[in-house]
Amino acid sequence: MLPTLKQIQHFVAIAETGQVSRAAQRCHVSQSSMTASLKALEEAVGAPLFSRHAVGVKLTAAGIRFLRHAQQIDVAVREAVNAAVVSPAAVVGSIRVGVTETITAYVLPKLLPALERKFPRLELEILERPRGEIEAEIQAGKLDLALLLVSNLPEMHHVGCETLLRSPRQLWGHPDHPLMQQEEISLSDVARHDYILLDMDEHIATVIKYWGQYGLTPSVRLQSCSIEAVRSLVASGRGVSILSDLVYRPWSLEGQRILRRSLTDRVPSMDVGLIWRLEGDSDAKMDAVREFLRVALLEVMS
Image (cartoon, rainbow, N blue to C red; front, top):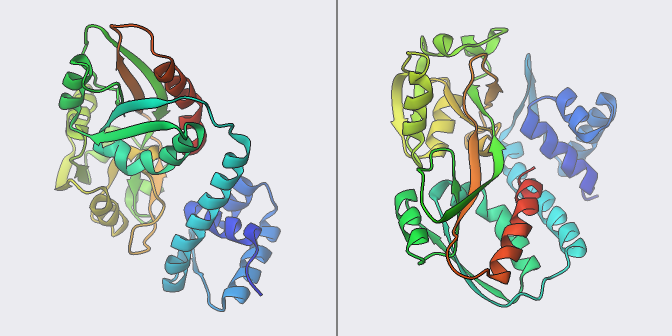
């Protein structure tokens, strides 16, 4: 017998939370129902998908393989539902949209299908650029719209800006890391441990800025331009990192668990937003796209 959609959704929730109890809360079912659902799924698949340990569960090799397909099924079903309720807009023409690498990797895969369903007759040209180039091309009128991290945007004349999503930053660590056992964690606590630094989309400038406000610097052990490398290093216990919930995944590619904890010190959120050139006549298609993105971005990233 094939697994049911509900069993697949329960499996994804357990995999993403790392605990049956938290998955049950997320899915609004009892813990016993979640346990029974997982047992039935493992019987249907014919293999154990998780191993149990003191702080939760860990994906088995079979579970890692199954998770990738299960997440695709879950996303496909959600997209099918959205496709049924989103009425296509009769907007025609073309729009050149600039995006930065973070947006390409973590926002665009979910957002682009929603845009294409809403505006089937609109030609969207998506161009990935460094943020500095995007700013210059918006001001020069070479790009119509840009979706990027707006937290550190400089003041620009004749350019509109709107924040659409604020993603909190939290501490990531291996479940057995000493910091994960503390009731409260401050930046000064983090500074005493090895730190894995992400070098992506001006993240280092943000790190220097907010650490500097407390007169602290992270003890950087390793630095990488790859978020997957950072995730794997954190999951293997090589150090901790402070990163946005937007790019959080509870497992590394190797199937090792990653926990996240909030900090007592104020850490800025990672803000995703739009910028566009203000000069010129009002453009109906631009207004329609911006209006749709205000709602769609929150929905697809929730």
